[in-house]
Image 1 (cartoon, one colour):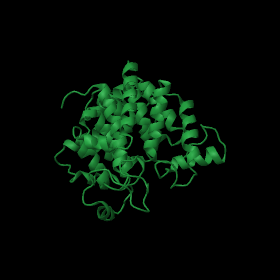
Image 2 (image 1 turned 180 degrees about the horizontal axis):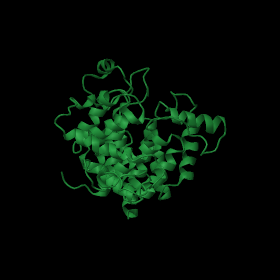
Image 3 (image 1 turned 45 degrees about the horizontal axis):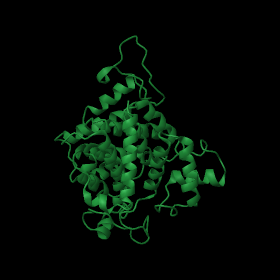
Image 4 (image 1 turned 60 degrees about the horizontal axis):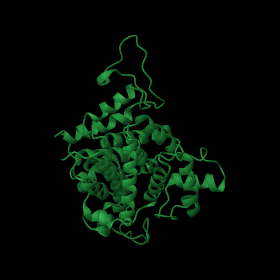
Length: 361
């Protein structure tokens, strides 16, 4: 596969996220796979509209969910401010999202409103609490779905990436394990943008950034995860409890190339790691598909969609990781053409990529 430039990787990752989200709009949240196959056929391969009575009902094929809408707000804020400006992002959330929802699940732009955003609405609108006091305990990937733009903007700047993603995540989710896993996903996505392959060496490269103090994860071991030397004080690079969220991707990449580990067909990764919404189900599945189909965007995202359950987050996160590896040119043209407001989104992606490249160290 030809080398992908940083600019093309950023565009590919961002467009990939929007496309992955839209591909799962129709068949979102089917935990009964037989019912999903009855409604959408044996293999979902394109955009589809939700059935009546389902999540996002009434939206057309190729439309984005509320997660994509919030990602739009994040990207717009980054473009207009030139960097992450938390006050500006919060203002956009207040004016462009919270004023358009009512705290119930099935309302607002993009259809379904997630738990963390509903909690934010109740505390912000009903109780009048300030930002910084509205986060809840949701253990889901909602923060990743918007902070992946921060990972793209701060690729090459691990400290800026970790600070901005952690701060933004804590606006709506206050579980520190969720925060650490969200930062880890961003750090992984950024390394892919920087041109590193999704392989068994990826975690070692992340740990080098921990040891140098660039990523705020706890580190005790010496090189190659060997025990610390006798009589030495363990190094503590940051506040997160352990580096395990950074070690996961290379373990999964090792499983991908191990002939003794078989997940066939690949969509069954959702059964192996779990179909529900929690971040600890979603990330291993996304990492598996991103490592296995590192050069095949279509296969990666379609296996994510066809796995059912919370396939929208799985597809969005997988598509961003693979989009960074294949670049914009590696995304099938039919999905670029079929994405509603696709040209507007492409223009946004190009502006963010230009900004990120210009700011890169």
